[in-house]
Image (tube, rainbow, N blue to C red; front, side, top):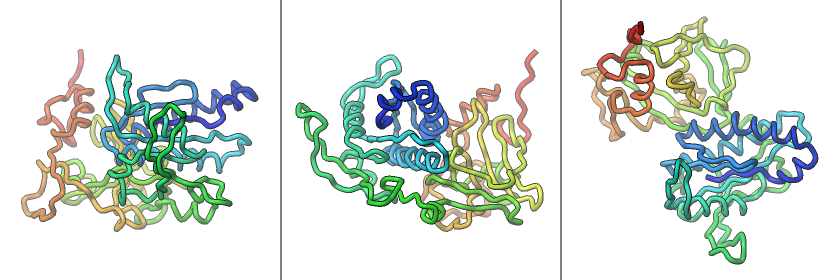
Length: 341
């Protein structure tokens, strides 16, 4: 995925310090967070340009949509006369790894696609489109074969197209449409409400012993979102350190189990919302089972969703190892890091 700031040279000529500060903030609060939340890696940033890699095509495109949606949302809600506008390109192709950097046709194609995208828009290759067709809710038009330079091989490009009268490019960001596109939810008593401005990253069932204790049920259902897109409106959950690696949020008034966030080896860029707290949980069907080692014997699972044990999670293995507990047998609600003398 390639991201670039539109009109960067002109912006810096008018206000260099202010523009550089806005780009740095954009990298930290929008691009970096979205890339990490969608399990990608930001491997290069050059002034106003950014390059990221993903192991999943759908996560790369979801990240691109999330970046544009969040950047536009922040621009609309700010008083900035010259907000940063982005172009994003997503390609699928081979790369060469060199000292942590990525080179090759896949990277070059992403950069060319980014240059072809409309300001505020996204462009993807035909190979990407073949893998995401019917899986995202953003319209991508077939724009045929295009070149950035006459010397380039033509690319079959699919792009978002802006519509007349909309300030958000291909996204309708007037207040009514913006409100309608938000994912909303809250606790049982309604004292804690939240809005989410990006699509979910992943969903699932969790049968682990900590989820069982926290929710008081045989398993939890969860939906993960980029943390930067979740906004608690008036009141935030109260947080409890459920283990050395994570904290969970609940409503102190009605006791609703609401959130989960990994804290080790660093604070995760995604926030898990327990799905029943969403106003429309039917739209977020679980896509996998985890924590199968703790599944209750009187539950029979009849679906064909993927099933994993907690110890098989690379993310959790890294988190528990970072606090000195690499052995999965030591993981659980009462786990404590070893004392260091």
